[in-house]
Length: 455
Image (cartoon, rainbow, N blue to C red):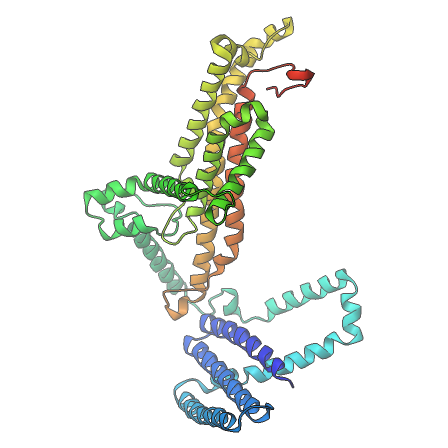
């Protein structure tokens, strides 16, 4: 067996032993999980010391004095390790401790069996068809589920109804206390705290620590606005440093900023055309960067995404609505703007349908800020709630150990959070660009007979 195989065995033992210890502590006893973890750690250290002795005695070209020193230190460490193992046997459950001691050897056995299985004809026939492989995997999952002890499936064996009611009452009281703390003591003021809560941020922690102060209530009330203003200032400062010392060969922050501006500029001009694109690009580019920064701000620890608050997103949608109507009135004039709302009637049929088109167009314009704000709010808030739900699940996995931390299950959704944040900023910007395009004056033909963008 080569040393590389021992390295793989150590890594597999570390992963399997950690998971087994967590499962044991959650569904069996915390002391059993601790014993399993200590036994696996003892075996891993023993393997490392054995490897050190073997390397020191068999490596060619190694100085004898250095090899003897390394081997002596490893053997001395093994003596201390065996003394620690004897102490563990008297203070931890022997069954779980022995199971931890045996973890590396079980990994070696399973590796040998898996290698023999993979090289067999039966395995080749199984993986040759994806349907057979999927059927076998499904059968193994069902069998593993039914072979689990009842307690590991979330069922409390032998628990009395009174005990279950007591646990539920304690959980409800704890949740109510946590919500009151998150809202800065709002329940004491007659405010009923309800609904799902997001991660605590810096402002909520300050409010919770000073829930009796009047300024704390004001701070909590304007929490989303404060974060929105702070993100805006952060974007401005970043833009200042990116453009403070421009160079012909950009690098670092200037390079990233120029790349972003160039891509946004090409995109906006591709929709609005070379005539109107440069005119509206500063607004549309600022909207994209600002919304993207607010979306991503919630990923920073102790911070919050302002766009997860409906007040902020509706303010953004209302700003776009007012700006688009102002563009329509300025570009088309009052008469042209009303003509646009009537559906640009030019025939008898158009004038007959004008009374019907007017309320439809008015309702469509009024629905635009609602659509923009609710879409952005719903996606970012739902994304935050997803992270909170899985973070709570990770804490619950270690609840029996009464630790202040848990398994970071929510970390697997960070790529999805980044994707959603970029996508929602992009969607908001694209819709704003299209709304502006629809309000611009219609031109049948431009220079050299080429058709222009029409609404």
